[in-house]
Image (tube, rainbow, N blue to C red; front, side):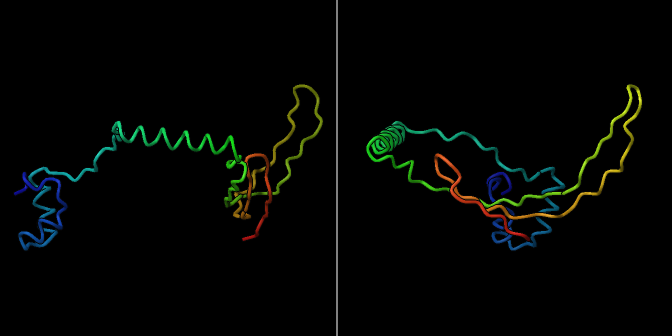
Amino acid sequence: MIKTEMFQPELFIVLELDICQKTIVSTLKCINVMFKFNCWVIHELTAEDKCKRKAAYLALLRDQRKEKILDKIVTYDEKWVYYNNTSHKGRWSAPGESAGTVARRALTNKKVLLCIWWDCRRIIYKEYLKS
């Protein structure tokens, strides 16, 4: 049964054999059967799919030339921006002389939420919201 049901999750085997899931998992480990995720492969397009995509691309290009539809699209995004307002100071020193040392401050959890809207040409609006 293990060979024929190799692609089925252990839950399927539990329901089929009416055995505890823990028993099935430990038995599979004893016989050196491991659970591994499948690899992703590139999806192959059929000739029909390629023709449909080409038609859609050409329609978008035609509409863009006529109405400039891409210029009308407005995009929005939010991003947490972490900041630390420490100042880094220096001093004048002679050649070969050390400029001195300053202990680095610990990282801070100060943050603001950046909300931003833009189109194809510029940023339309941005806002910083405190946490």
